[in-house]
Image 1 (cartoon, rainbow, N blue to C red):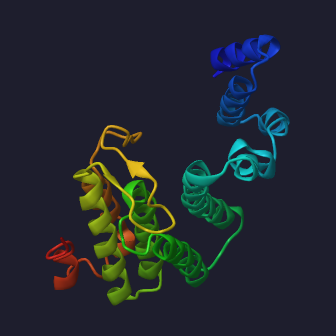
Image 2 (image 1 turned 180 degrees about the horizontal axis):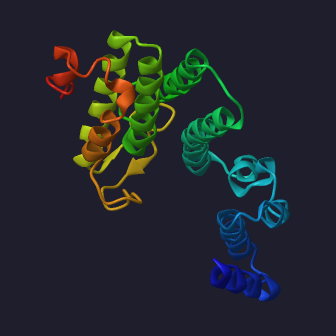
Length: 223
């Protein structure tokens, strides 16, 4: 981290190219945060623009026609992902009850379902996979076996798509100018999504339902 920070600060002392500086500022924030230096991380984060001043937002009033349509749709899908992220951070900021967490996660899942209403989720299967795993854990905390198994089945469906990901195009009216590529589908772990889900299902929170037929049959007939 020290080497990374030193390199970033060297670039920032010399670079006058805005996009490069913003990318390096982001890396610097992450590096200081990983070191545990929250004060320096915040100092560098404050140098970045507010989201209302980002290229994506400002260009909407500049572009026209097809270019505007593509950008607006890209932004719509990105905003849903950003809301997903923000809700996740919100739930880490204080203690919420399992019922409150379920409401928050399910609200985000509904956003994905509203804007990508035809269930052609593309890259957004990743967000939904994580949401339904989290929802399953919270329903398990409430000892609701039916809802727990239902959430795990939904997580399983998204995991299956992600492990067999194919290139394609979005078809919702809010995203139909966008595409997703098998080659552009990246992840920061080596295991499959199915493996990740199976590991999650080993959590003791699911012990109360583990020996049921419904739990053993998770994933059957889902695809």
